[in-house]
Structures are given as structure tokens and as C-alpha cells.
Image (cartoon, rainbow, N blue to C red; front, top):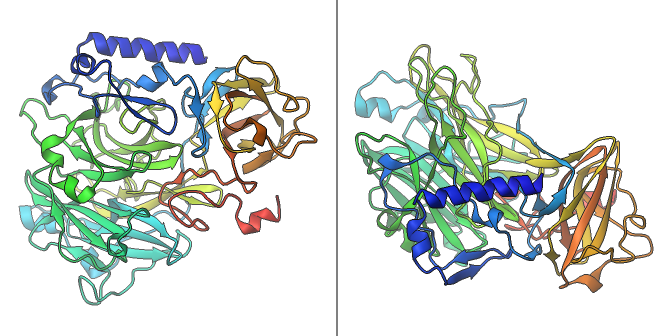
Length: 572
């Protein structure tokens, strides 16, 4: 399976080259190597890649090439984070079957609804004089984070349709309160407003790496009208008091967002193309990166390069029969890779709002996205009257780690009968197992998975596995394939649990610290079960030292330095 997948990726990459789309990339600085990433990937000398001029009318809808899958590193360091099986990057050979999993809607969704007077306002209706009576308490990217200082879930959202930004808080991530604040608007939970403009996308980011406490929170919010949009950048110590803008972009597309790539210490502007020819109304994304988000704001519009769009592998709706487009891309660091939430727009029906849905993408270099499962990860409903009948879109920060689960917040709109208006705009919640994007599965006959050559500095092996009705063994191999004693399959204590954090032990051995820094392979033997991830930790607690997206209860920052929570250690 692995060789077939890699061959297809390589063939696709070669085809992309032959079409001339990478001509500039291959002609410039061929011999120059760029940055070496945490996972062994070597970036090209020219970065970000130049995929040609911004000629949107000639976008050929070919899937994005993923060079690091076509040519993986000879040895892959795995010291950062849980290692997920969302692609074949880590796999040399396997007889297991990969299954992709989708999030499930929480029974209490939507978890936030408009019920305040200022959430009933509609600035779009006022500005354009149309009969749109939509109301809003929805994340339009914006952000949902767990703040370890205050031990609270915090949500920023669009309150009132295209009006302002509000904050809500929660102790459990399910039941939310709208505090009365003195900031922004007296006796309301409004924290930011530019009353003379229409508010579109917003992104709030809890920056754990910021040394200035007054800039711990960052707000990037798009205001404008028509085709005249800009992102205003603010900073705050508490996410409530933002003050005046400290920077502003030049003109960009309305549904533009930003996220942070901590692997490379870069802020990524995900910009909607705004200079569209009248003959090409394709929604595409531009890319700009900068180490300083404030300085980068002034350069983003002018220096952005073409990034990506929806492609021919995104399935068309049978009732529309037209190519999909990419409405937005939010991203976040999750464990050992970048997780992308792609809002896919299948087109505009005449009698309902946009049937947008959220799909997944994964990146190990921060620019190239692998999208192996094109099904909706979080979908719209096809039943009028449901809260999520139209326009499901992602939240900034993407997801939170809450115990054994991932919490995905999303915007949803009820729609209005027989028109394109949004109706009631709310915030929903969907749940996935931790690391549960993809599993490697085996049945009664069992199977194996052998990794590529790996290198690590830790000494304890952990897995996220569902094998309560089966068993999992692991063994360590030399690069040549010979078993390293005593870390053999026969000496491995069988794993027969269903846990998102489970240690793997060998009889008579405390750890494998002697193998630190050496090149080895891992081989898993699985029967009647699912393997979601593995990692090698320096800590017996199982701390992965990977990134935890928008955080979660029990964590102290942006990375998992905790492993087993205190209440779990007693059961371990």
C-alpha cells in the first residue's frame, strides 16, 4: 500500500512539473538547500515556493504536490509530538488498513446562540438596504482557546451580523456565559467594534511565546465594505481590552485569516485573493509568512504568493454540478504537524445559503497540504430548520485537547426559507478522539507496520490505540531490519486497552535510553484493533512535547509537557 501511495504522489508531482507550474521553482536556486525542519524535511532554497504569477484565470485545479511525501528524509527525527498516521511519511511498509474518521456533533450543539440585543443587529442590512434579518453569535474564524492563567475556555465571536466582536467564557467548553464588561460597550460583552464599517473575518490568537504580557492576545479582524477590506491588528493582555490598532494591512480579500506556525516561528497570512479578473471568480488563497505579525501586516498584501485552492478531487454536489472552491483555510500546530481546516464551498444554490463544509488537510512543512480524505469532516445538514443547514466554517485555533477528546467549534447558519440569507448564526461543537483523524487497522488475521528509519532522544514508547478486543506488540529494529534485543515482539508486553495514552513495555527492561540518538526502525504487530499514533517521550508520564492546538484543561502552555494528568496517573 505504501509503495503504491508514494508512487501516485510522485507521478502527480512529476505531472505538475511537466505542466510548467513549478518552472520558476526549479529554475531558481536548484542547488541551494534551505532550512532543515524539526522532522528532517529540508526546505528548498527559495521559500515559500513560487508556483508562478497570480494568474487566477489559469488555475488548473490540479491537486497540490507534496514533495516531502514523494521524497521523505532518509532519517526522520521524532522528538516533537505524537506521530500521526495521516499519510505515509513515517511508514516504510504496512499490511494495515488506514481509516479516516470524522467528527461527531455534540448533542448540545449549538453551544452558543444569539440572545442579546446587540446580537440581533444586522449591519449588512443597513449598509446594503437588503431584507436580510440575520442574527449572529458565531465564530467566523475568531478563536476558541483554553487560557491556563484563568483556567477558562474563552470564545471570541461575531456578534450581530457583520457588526462587532464579543467574548464568552466557559468552565467546561460546553456551557457558555456572556459576561457584562466595561470594555468596548458598557453592560455588554462586546470587546471590539468599528461602527462605521462592516466586520468580516476575525482571528484571535493566544500567543504563548509572546514576552510582552500586554501583547499576549492578538486580534486580526477584517473590516470594510464592497471590495475595500483590510485587516486591523490589535493586542491585549486579557483578550478584552484591545485599544487602538497597532498595525493595518493594505487591501486584501474579505475572508482572510492568520495563524501561527511554531515549528518555524512564523505567522502565516491566509489571504483570500481579491484582485480577481471578471472572467475568473475562483476563490483561491495567497500565502505570506513573517516572524513578526505586526511588521508582516504592512507587507502581506504586496508580498503574498499564490498558495492553493479547491481542486478536482473535491467532490461536486449533484444538485449543483460545478467545481468546488476554497472559501477559507484555518491552521494550527497539532502534535508533530500542521492541521488545516479547509472550508469548501460547493457553489451557491438558488434557494438556500452556501452549503459550505469543513474538510481536513495536513502539512509537515507548513506550506504543502496533503488532503487524503475529501469527505466533509464537519458537514452541513440537508434539512431546512436545522441550526447547521448552511455555511459551516471553522474556528481560529481549530481545536482544543479536552481529556481524551478534541473539541472542534464551528459556525453554522440556519438559513431562511427559499433565499440565500444566513438566518440565525450560531456556534456548534463537534468531537473527535484525540489523534483520531486516521487509524491503522487490523482484523482477525492481524498485520504489521514498519516505520522508516527514525531517530529520537527519548526513552519511553507510547501509543494511542484501540485494542481492547485484540492486542498490539512493538519491536525495535536496526536500520538493516535486524531485531534489537531485548526489544523484540516476543519480549513485548501485549497492549490490550483502549487508551489515548498507553505505555509500551518489554519484560526486564525499564527503558531504551541506550538507543537515544541512534537510527532505528519501529515495527508494530496489531490484531483486532486500531493504532492512531505513537511517540517516544523523555518522560515516564508520556508527555509528547508536541503542540496542542488551542490548548485545553491541565496544560500549561502551547505544548504537552504534562502527559498523564494527575487523576490518570493513579489508573496507569
